[in-house]
Image 1 (tube, rainbow, N blue to C red):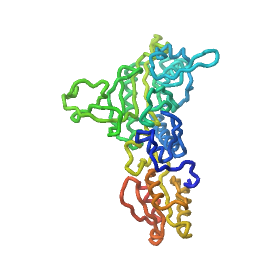
Image 2: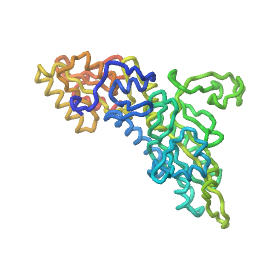
Image 3: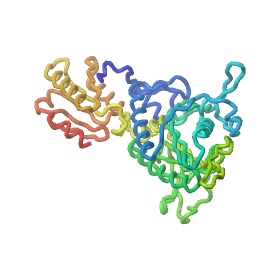
Image 4: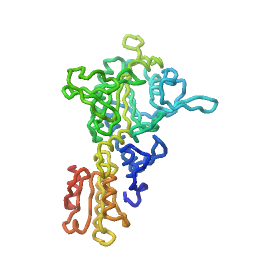
Length: 413
């Protein structure tokens, strides 16, 4: 991608109505645009990051047997009445259609997926089954805050598993913990498994939290036995497992998983026939990752004063190519253009700063703000040495790498 063709542009000023760090940086760098409180447009760079995260999530969900579907965002009032969440889910968007029929916009999809599975599961032979989607969710947050961490409209992966008994659910649940840790690690985050309340979904849940000074959640942790508890279920000043001292940490929740039991199965009469011909309730679990929330969390964790520092796996481009003096030196122009084409041919994502009316200082400032993993600079100095200047965004020092060794260098990470 040539930077002159890029739809979005960087901004020097921090938006005055955004207090959250992730939104400030993403808006300034041109990854997102704010439509209204809690609602954002994903611009080309932001959408690419979102897509990269989705690809990682899909890979890991498919590995443990998840099958992807896409459910409607709009669902009838009657389904929510069956579960008691028409009145009990306080952030549910409700609307009226023609004929005064009432609907809800999907804040979660138990009310849709459970009756769906009832149409296809009859026997124990049909279980277990695991269905997931990556969908837009809507929640009527009274005070949306923290940028992408808490919005009214957001992207989410939600998976629902269906089992014949609790033992089968418990076994699958452990697979999920492993899969989630892989997802977050691939996205550049170190997560802690935190015990928490289940809200409207279940009595208890497990959260995946990233410890950061910028977090909005409070987690109490035992350094002795590595137990972590959300403040909502925290009691006492010592660890309930080993009586060790507890420490208080700020954190960002990036995923959660629940053992739902038979609650929603009973609400929709979802049953199966076992080997003895007896009718049994299906046991359910649900597993969520806020895709857009995860994007925001990565920015909160990976940044410095100059801008974003994207982990390689989710960056919109791998390298940022910047020629210096190309408008006055044809050799610089030709070398940069040849390198740009070579990187593209080798499927190395590259953003080519071909702008001629921007000073070197501004180009470097924009590169730091955008946060691509590697910056490549072509100049008279580098050409004289037969290479280009290479600087990793997360490092301070740059080095000269010979052009014929560049691909090998990049492949080494």
